[in-house]
Image (cartoon, rainbow, N blue to C red; front, side, top):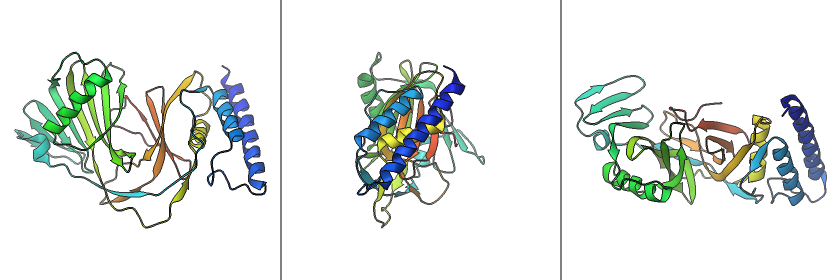
Length: 293
């Protein structure tokens, strides 16, 4: 594909789509893109725009109207003795405190994040677990018995560049995932290698009126505009509504609703469901989590 021509074609298509939106907004009785379900004709225009940019929709686009509010959270401080047990050496630092323990190394970060590395790995109870259905219950049993985590929501399983499998769990907030609150377990072969967790404590919702959430189709449109045309086919495989914010070293903060978009099973993007802005992105192979745009 000629990227230069593709960009020009994409710009022209985008201008045409914006003209259509402007025309629609000026029509009597039209309540706006965020006040009602996305019109079917507009949905088709968005789908064509996305396809021209070389993005393939493996899931249907939702055009339903929704409302939502921020949620307020505070970091949950995991008890160090619960995670580290007996340490034979502790090294304190500005970035993290490192506990050297028999068979593992534990890093405690100032904001509440914890990373556990098992030096020789922890063997699965039932070796040979090849499918997600076989692996998931073993990982969940491990979390309950070894880290005393009882309430978590299975999110997804991804495969890293070296063949490791990363099983992610999130926190359930009224049926939606709080993506900022996570447990990531890395399994290589038949052994658990590491656990990366950052858990949050939901507080009361702010006393405010619900605001309008952009339709899922518009969220994908905004992402494609941000990324630009691709020189190879990119598959959009997941599109979910939840909550997400960066990690803060604060007593509490507000978290907006987001549309989470996963491309090719490797790249995750968070679109603010109120504004349509790209909040953050994450590549599965990034060691330290999301990168800030």
